[in-house]
View 1 (cartoon, rainbow, N blue to C red):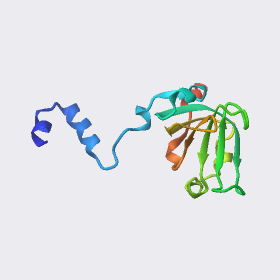
View 2 (cartoon, rainbow, N blue to C red; view 1 turned 45 degrees about the vertical axis):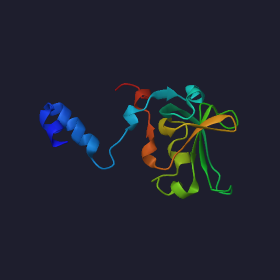
View 3 (tube, rainbow, N blue to C red; view 1 turned 120 degrees about the vertical axis):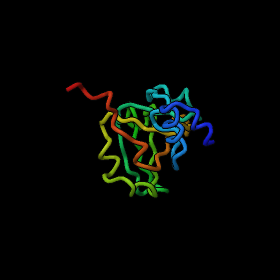
Length: 138
């Protein structure tokens, strides 16, 4: 491996070194960016899904104490959903249903289908971000 590094140009060495760092791997930037409406066509794929959180609810009396973030339309008409289980909720500095409701958000993860609705299960706050592209310039 050292020989391969020695023969590479400077930029290639840096890229390879970064790829070999512990914890390095595909980043959110590497995932395709799709809209919430497009998510149903990408079930099983890793993607960054972006859209407006039209409804949010913490179902603390339900099994698993999930938090739901409904994209584009509130439940039961949501086109895409984020699920944050109660075991992961404490990782967030603010309640997710408050922090993200009515905001433009991107979520990164593997899209799955549950009862006909595409969703991503979020286990870390790093999977969610406000959509910088949706902000007005200035």
